[in-house]
Length: 221
Image (cartoon, rainbow, N blue to C red; front, side, top):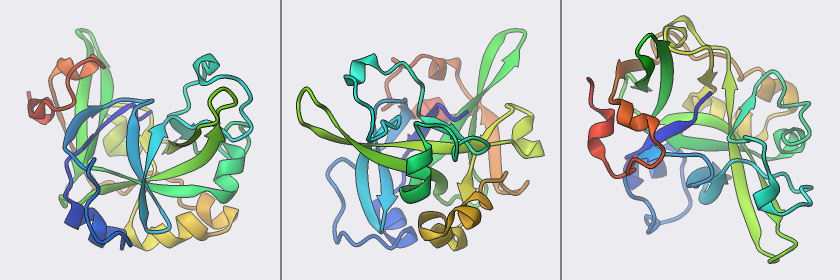
């Protein structure tokens, strides 16, 4: 799974990469180094950067949000077209999720050791996502939310974990967002062996309460 990530890209980087229509940077674009599920992240939909809850809430969900017990921040490539919480969004609401890097944990005799993954070329990682909009019956507030797609790992990622996010290249963006289901499904595969790099980092990342402003979390140990 992909349960934590970082955001320290610049506005110019993502503006150019996704050909965003907004002329100026949003006020909430700040570096974050320990982003956790259910917090607000940015997703790209139709060349717009939209804040969303990380953890999808399907539009049909009829209970209060506090009663949702499902972990919906990741959607498996093998079942996204079938699971009730994800299938409608996969059909019609696919998005791009920019991240600077993400963490995965390796089981060791000394406990869970986090590793940090980034692109070898230094570019922003684009993870395939799905999104939906849900309206609370209690408050009438509409909430946009999203999930990251995960798939089986390539050999490089499998050294740490048995899953990895679906990583899209620039040429894939249009096919993922607006392609038919067959073409979108064809993109849900492991990244090439030389796309990513990784290194072990501090176990302080294991604690969701660790400040997401701590730049040292991504330093090698």
